[in-house]
Structure formats: C-alpha cells, structure tokens
Amino acid sequence: MTDKKLNNGCAVALGNFDGLHIGHLAVINRTAEEAGKEFTAAVMLFDEHSMKAVTGEAPPKLITDSERAELFKKKGIEAFTVSFSEIRDFSPEEFVEEILIKKLNAKVVVCGFNYRFGKKAKGDAKLLEDLCIEKEIKCVIIDEVEADGMAVSSTAIRKAVECGEIEKANSKLGRYFGYCTEVIDGDKRGRTWGFPTINQKIPEGLVVPCFGVYESVVTVGSESYKGVTNIGSRPTVGTEKILSETHIIDFNGDLYGKCVDIRLVRFIRKEQKFSSFQELIEQIKSDVSSVKGGV
Image (cartoon, rainbow, N blue to C red; front, top):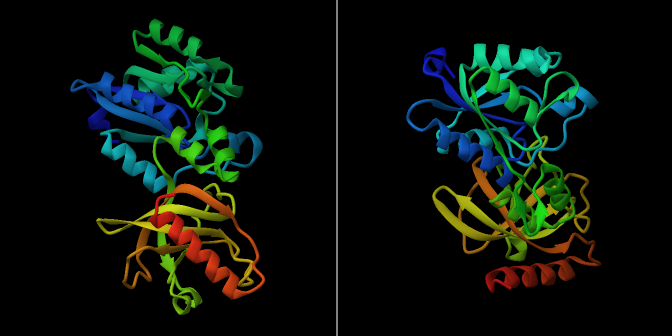
C-alpha cells in the first residue's frame, strides 16, 4: 500500500487472517463496507504469525499466501504488512498511536470479538474500542461466527483437515480447502492401469490433510473437472514421499510443469496398503465410480 492511498484515511481489518475462514471474512467484508468510496479498504498483516514469535513455531496454514493475496484483491482490500518483531513490545496505546494512526491513518478499525494486541497480548477488543473512541476512530467489533452449531476458528479447521473431516472444514472456510501447485514428474504407473494421474507437492507450511482418498474439483486453465485425489505416501507402491496424486476424470492432456488447482470436496477412505497392484486397481475403479456417480 502506498502512502498516497492512505492520505484520505483507511478502514483497516485487524487479525492474523491465517485461514480466511468465514469468521475472518466477516471482518474483511465489514471493512470493505465501512470503507465505502471514502476510505481505502485495508488489512494489516504481520510478516510472520504472532504465534511463531511467541512459541518459535507457526501453526500450519489453511491457505497459501498467494491465494490469500488473490482473495484480498478480489474483495478490493489493500494489504499492509508490518514487522511483528517491530511492534511486539508496543503497549496497546503505542500500537494505536504508532500503527493505526501514524502508519495507517486509520479512520475505521474492524476486528473480531477475540482480538488481542499489544505486548503479551494485554489488549483486548474492548480496550481497542476505548482507545479508538479517545482518538475519534470508529471501532467495529464482529461477534463470534458459527457454522454447524460450533464457533469458527482456525484451530478447529486445522484439526478437521488433519482428521479427514474435509466437509466440516469446508463449511467453516466458506470454500473448498485446497492448493494450486506445479505438476511434477511421477512414475507414470497410473497410465498403464488406465488411470493417469498428476503428482503435486503439498505447499510448504500448509496443513497436511489426513492421508487418504478424496473427491476433488480440479481446475485446469478455465475448465473444471471432477477428480480423485490421493494424499499420502502410497504404501502399496512403496515411497516415503508425501504427495498429492490426482486422477482427473474425463481429461486428456499433458500437464507437467503447469500449475493445477486441487480442491478437496469429500473424504472417501483412508490410505491403505493393498496386497497386490490388481487389488489397488480395483479399488481405484471403485473410487472413480463413486465420484462419477456423486455418491
């Protein structure tokens, strides 16, 4: 974000936004609404997850940085990144003065009900509201968002993805969980079985889904196809590499070196080791039939 864009002030969304789930989107959408045509709609991001600075390790991501940036762009939100190490020792009052006022020229601030800020997270949403009132900044606090009768949180969604509860995770994300990565060379064994596949690495830092087979939506260019995606180490074949391996139904073409988008729709079964390749082939046929029929 340029200083020029900040001259008229901004409406800024505050939070980690590590998953851009429906709770985060409620904050983002309200920010865009508050900005209107008068202010710049912005989101303040840290250069690292706040948990990494505290524990030394960041939690796995629910969305890649590039996909998050694209979603912000689609919603007309300008991203502004600050160094967490630079502000981690700020008091709540210093954060408001130095970041919200001096750096961002904030006229409206939007955050979730559980937002924490300032050194050792001493500040909460209520304190932020009080400090903003003192500085004549409008503060909007978004209530807790629920899905399927449960509060939405990045922690709960990560757990759902890791447990193979992908439909539960998707309902809280407000979109299909997935990734868009380059297709890499494989052993091409699937071709000889009549089920050619594309191999992809799980993006570094992204939460790794439960090993198993999923129904997926595969986007190649502007076209979308049904797919069957296996995530794991393929124990029957005998490899230790963790890969995403997808058979794209009713697709023919060479995708090596191209970026293909995979979205996980439904968990079909856990990964297992078969006694023979023929037994594996029969199971793949069953998996493909299940996806084709929409079972």
